[in-house]
Amino acid sequence: MTADLSGKELAAGIRAEVAAAAAELAAAGTPPRLAVVVATADESSAWYVRSIARAAEKTGIACSIVDLGESATPDRIRAELAALSADPAVHGIILQTPLPGDAVFEELAAAIDPAKDVDGANPLSLGRLAAGLPAFAPATAEAVLAVLDHHGIPLSGAHAVVVGRSTVVGKPAALLLLQRNATVTVCHRNTKELAAVCRAADVLVAAVGRPNLITAEYVAEDAFVIDVGTNPTPDGGLVGDVDAGSVTGFAAGLTPVPGGVGPVTTALLLRHTVASARG
Image (cartoon, rainbow, N blue to C red; front, side):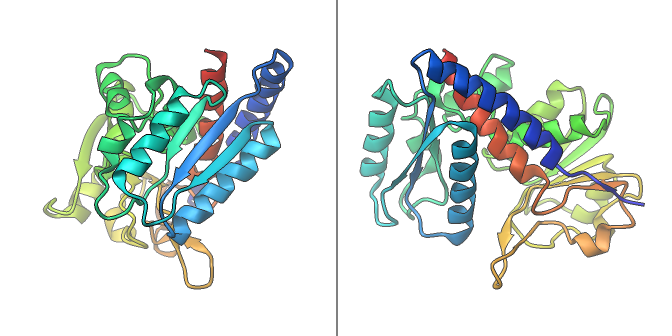
């Protein structure tokens, strides 16, 4: 029997906490505001940004979508991030991916004030995370840990395998798992015998952006599988990086897509925004 590692209940609890904090801040004269900078026409990205805006509205956080268009230059994006960083009315800033072809995410994210870097995109934030210093962690990576904790999955001493090494999810998720005393293996496209490495995991995190890559062949029977993938389908739906039909009934637990990591990620972005507004 595969447990449903849903994030909906956890996300609802975080949103309720955020709504109370946002109301308190607004009453004190500091209404929290989040800005999302977009320079893409990618539909998966658009779906994610819409979900952030809806959640922000429901919790009393103002959310500005700054759409620069898919032809925006790196200089234009950098200037917008710098302007938002300097705006005292803005408390959280997100640089949405993907970016135009000549733009380097890490270079542009360096323009975000670390105090407003609610998605842990600035390399300074990632460096502080690696050093165990206070910083906003990338929300999706933090959501992986939050879902595991919510469902009572032990991490100390566990072997965690993270498939994907992006600075947005894979690397920070590995750092957070290390902080919880898991033994962590990070896999990527050059990993040999990927399925065998994954089968050794107590906790398997799939974060590669390849639909249905992870099948039962990659999963041990007692493993908990966290699917970070959000891959759009032609009919407007979403599928994860895990082939849920193959893994369900085999793995010990699996996050659904949608409804697993995604809603928790959004809720944590809002939590980070009110934390930034509090100063």
